Length: 208
Image (tube, rainbow, N blue to C red; front, side, top):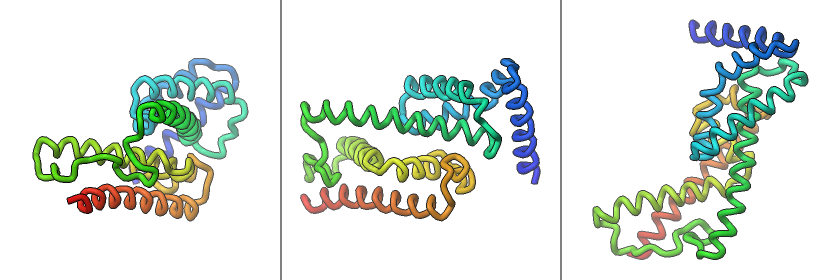
């Protein structure tokens, strides 16, 4: 109950700050940035896995929020609004990064097949402790690759729920989608990632 009251108090304070900021009070907007900057940075860092990208996206997010502040009508909480801006900016950055990486990998040679399995990995080395760390790293890259291949809406829901830890209600505020649609996309995203992990291990066991 205290958490709900605290959350309501934060939303009310945000509403007051937004009203002042919309009236031209710069200090009020600075207070909003101070209140939400760390959470926005945390979200974008988890999505991009790059401190430099997260810092830049966080700046872009609040710049965009300031530029469109007069359009904000308060239908959702200010925090949810800026989270949605940040998530969209991060997804745009990931799309751009994926295009660049695809161009580089075309020159260097892919590490995974189109089905997401490791293209080359010595199957006889599974039991070696030294190779265990390599295996963990390869699995992580396989999972990351599978995550990157998810359709945007699926990846966004997966990152917000399973990585960022938002509730279905919060994700609905961030994305503007219904909870049933969110649950459906999350289920399919999890299945896709599970299949990628299964392919990874089956590739190794098939070779052994």
